[in-house]
Image 1 (tube, helix red, strand yellow):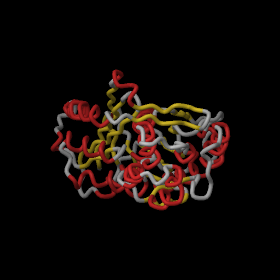
Image 2 (image 1 turned 30 degrees about the vertical axis):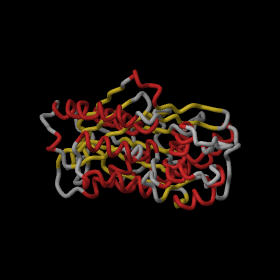
Image 3 (image 1 turned 90 degrees about the vertical axis):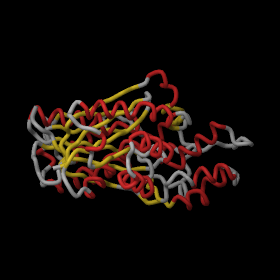
Image 4 (image 1 turned 180 degrees about the horizontal axis):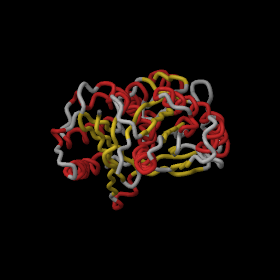
Length: 354
């Protein structure tokens, strides 16, 4: 099949929220100054996050799901337009040049979806193919990339991918906080400490331009025996995440053989890679996956940088890391992107920098 390459990136971010201020000004009162909760909040590797809803000024913890989804429609469209326009402009394309648009989000739903409203507001072609991917969570960027790349390979026309997540719409801190802190309350503290908002877009084209990342292969592995370890449940107060402490251990067991099998199909080994883009589900996941794959601290730094400066933006995180990795590469060669989510599911993309 003909090649498909990531030619450009674009992003849009809502208001920045310093991590320390979020604890001091909001979460501290819900957790009653609990020292365990405070330590969890401050040790996840995040310094700054972004939020369409800043709890320091607007407490939506008692909002129903319908109100949160209405707010998603208001906030998501301008962010999506900004990110997509930036990616298109960086590649010198007009929105009407696209043959396909793939949109991924697990934090907001409505019909018509963002894929339709974005096509309308950006004056995309009436013959545009569009795809809306929902509820896959953090790994959704890779299947979204795969769908866009498949289209480009077959039709030799450009496509775009947008990952847009507004996790700030799902704040629902535990109240009253159990004493001592239960495992569930601690788990929710970690969720509230990690997740953030962002819109990240990429243009995929058949053009072999300098700096482009060729999509060589997409691979997946799901361990359904551990499906209960990560969840994203629709509740009357928005969506609520379940995250087992066993997740890093399970990923550590699977990530190396899955990655080595992907590389072997192309005559490659781990030591042949020029870069890594690993989704930072949290510091422990980064440490475990990095150790299993023998990733050097320098190769892991882009993931740490994005986690520090943007938090875990669910599916939007990986495009941010890929752009960071691409900008820092000094020579062409293969790299691997990895992301993880409910299933437990591991998605990998083998890419080649030109």
